[in-house]
Image 1: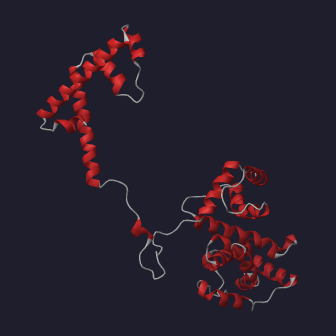
Image 2: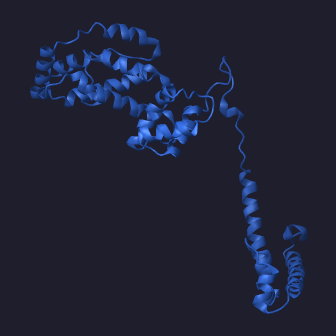
Image 3: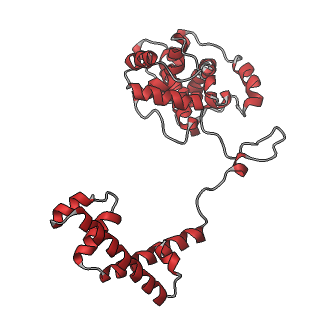
Length: 303
């Protein structure tokens, strides 16, 4: 039974405003006896009787609402949780086998909870969380376990509490710490959230783009490319030893020491320092000459 096949007799749930009305209306549907439930389930199983399915669904709407109330602490509308739970209930009715000997409520409860939990995980954050069964168990049990340990939300969890939760739920201690921090921050907030009670102004109005303007970024890239070309051209004024020493001393992320280079060229450290200084002077003069030829201000070229 897909979302498109929702029995027409299910009362509409249009949001929080109609929630009380919905909860009152679903109480009108009778609770089935075991024999009634069994016969309806067999009718649907054998003949796909939509009326039988509708009676099975509507008789368990109160169960969905009760389960939804247990998930109110995740900041989502109860009406949305009930709607998702109703979808899970219908899936449970579709797959229910009355010959196994247990009641529909026992079986459908797992479908209802699974549907609600998937909805909560999807809605909690744009960043995917709870990707494994253990992480989902952590997400939905962390608050209860913190209450049992009297680890209230007044800061980071104590190491002994982290270890206890990690062991009981079968997840790593780092996963416990990360999940606790994320849940303490709450779910994602909309950038369109009003900044005041009168609805004036939105969160996005106060966000500042820290990135440079596009034209400035393009100009910076072009300038960096030009400097790189000029440097390569200026390096041609140096001999191989001067190029190597200047590169190893000033143009790499991890410069070599004077001692290291003195061993390579079998000269003193002072001699390496002199070659470096002379090479840098030659490079500066070459860069200024090239900048002049290209009609570029010298200081900018050497920046």
